[in-house]
Length: 498
Image 1: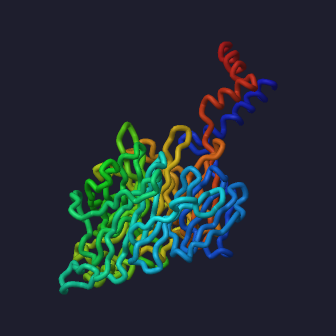
Image 2 (image 1 turned 90 degrees about the vertical axis):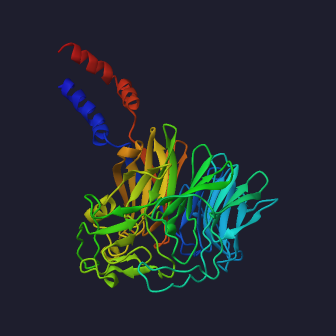
Image 3 (image 1 turned 30 degrees about the horizontal axis):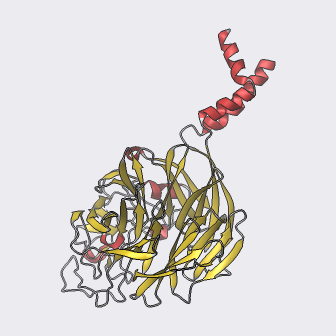
């Protein structure tokens, strides 16, 4: 009887390990949700400050500083007197705000706040950068701050002629897209990297859309020597050399063939989810990007959201190019598509690419189909870009690299988790689905006292949710637990008698 009881105890101890044998994650628990209604902040991007144990959430009108322990509001910082805030990053007690001018084509600013006083720092605290600073990030050592100046035009260029694909001329007022590089030791803009004359490689770089190249998001490699910048509307990524502070190349990201196995899409908003393999291609057009290193090589993780001009002047229906049902309602690029050769915006996936832009892994049609399986696929977005993967965040668990991919267009907030430790063999782990939250925009992972957290900023529901992620205990942890109960010795003795 005693042996049976101990055997049952051993089995109960091993069940969690067996249940999660293929995953580095044991459990995911929501710690709290904060609704930003009172301040009017649109929950878009967040940054964690370890000095004060606070989460800073930015969106349009300002920043809400939240207590990490319970999600309560510590303070609201109103930025409307300066312009509209688009992004925030924190390093060593300094919070950097990216603020666009109230006139979108005018230069924007970066401001520095002390995270302890939650007020502008002493000394130089405001720098002028390019128009529409959309995102900013520190190098790992905090010595540099990079700012993506999207620089959208106020009015896009007009169509030239009637040819198909369409061609648009340059915009009348279109500030130059660029990346500002700030030296944090001197608090000065030491360089502004642009794209004129930069070498282009790859394919399907969009240059006839009535606007110039617009940087969207920045990822810096582990060594701080290169930055990878998504050029979303151009369907490209720029490689920025941080030794010379100039772009070394622009890589065209090509197109995804939706007719191939594993790349199916649902092109109809007809109330029925039906995945098919149509003769259509998708331009990757990534939004969020992250970078990590494996065996000394950089890899880029991209959320292939897809995007058109803000005025949708480069968007048409496939039916206007002669496509018949079920493709007639599909929205495609007017500057890339022609009858029988259709290009949609976005790849409805996330990709991992090497430094040269070669695809090492793509999630195919998995994200759309997983959302459908979970009952959160929004059929109303079928003819556009499906679940629209938007944000990317990387974190580490027990030596494994995990990618969190935010899906902007699902019926409930959804974040897919993948193990990408081996870039060529990335594997799906789980989907975080949250009732009451909608449209994750920004993701931020961080560690506090050995505990892993993931903050999710949900733009449409205007909420920020914090999750704690528990790793599967490593084998030695179970060995120590069993040893503490005297079970390893028992097991060995029992085996010796068999």
